[in-house]
Image 1 (cartoon, one colour):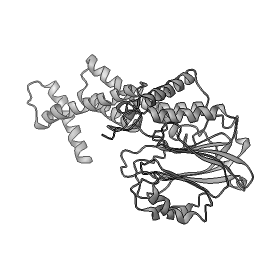
Image 2: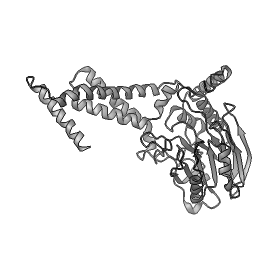
Image 3: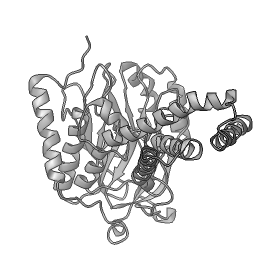
Image 4: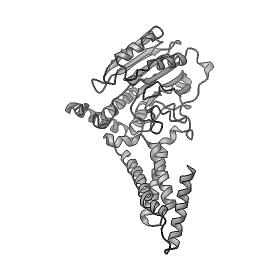
Length: 401
């Protein structure tokens, strides 16, 4: 790192000298900086700004919604691009000023979106006390096992180590159901719906399940689990386990089904009685996307990551492109005892582990629920109507051709 930095600084000083001395000849390094670095800096900054603008639109196309994900990377790219341009190539022209200002605005906007998920923000969910947790707390492990993954033993070892009370696994086919069968004696209550299309799911519980059911909220091949479970202290908790279909190139180019499922669940929670509620799963969306933010406002649920960190769970195989896709949201009936990302299990997702304490005193004013904003219902209706139309025409089906 030191040598390239020294070259860059040297080239900058040479460029400054050339501007002062027109008769001097350009060095090879100066020509390299001028012909390669400047266009690269401008291209990176321009792409970062355009991606930021695209993320502000309501388009559901994957090429637009993909810009919701890498906000940290976009902020870093815009900041570096703007700084290098100002240091090396700034001549005071209007275009130069606009380029630097656009990149600065990009950094500020992206920083505003990701700031809640850093320690610069106040924690939304308060810390509970372990001594108050008897018969009122539970441990939940959620994991996208990746259907082709053959390393079930790694997940079983984690379960043995962390001893969750409930386990929700998605992308489970028949092979994974068999691999998890050794847990049946320890987790006598279960709901299993294996599928070979990456949308199977398994829920295992030490606590009794009340009216457990599989529903197909948006698409007939994408299930979700809905149930109540009863804590040893007698309190009943509502659990919604989701794994909506994501937007992606070629096969599923629209986020409409995913958005509609999140909106439908969020609205149902918001309109229901004020009951202790959990929503968990691989939502195929980042915490700071417009849809996730709308979901929280519609449901009134809290995010325990706010003020604590990103807890990036995907992609486990790529440390430079990781995002928080696996979520646990909850109502303000709970305080947090533990939250962590667990080690690699051979999947492209890291498992997530959360321990919550049921505490009715946790609500206002200490933990006010997420409040709705004007226009939320109109946005929700728009997403639901769009999905209804796509389902009617068949446009919401994967393109396997």
